[in-house]
Image 1 (tube, rainbow, N blue to C red):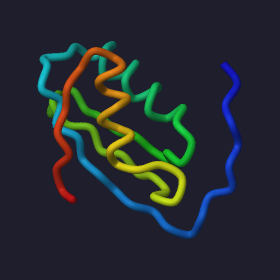
Image 2 (image 1 turned 120 degrees about the vertical axis):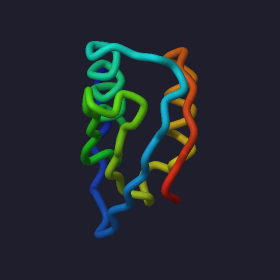
Image 3 (image 1 turned 180 degrees about the vertical axis):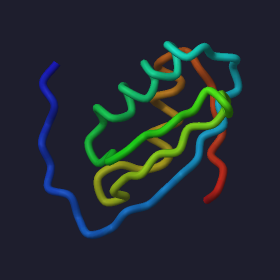
Image 4 (image 1 turned 135 degrees about the vertical axis):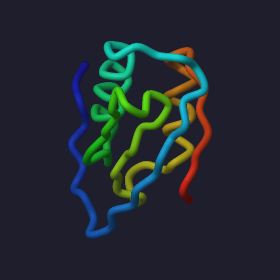
Length: 84
């Protein structure tokens, strides 16, 4: 899959997703990698100590927080946005 290259703006937003499902380390790493492939996502971080949370840093001019929920649904997982 070829990734589109977009020029990032000067804006950075952070969002935390609460993942409903119980996931193992590898599933969270795969989800993080999927999020990092999205245009506008600069960072995605998850930790084994808090397996239901993933923090995403992104450019809101290139991707919206709701796009993350769609991505979760496409992977078969469900999540809620927190920390808006």
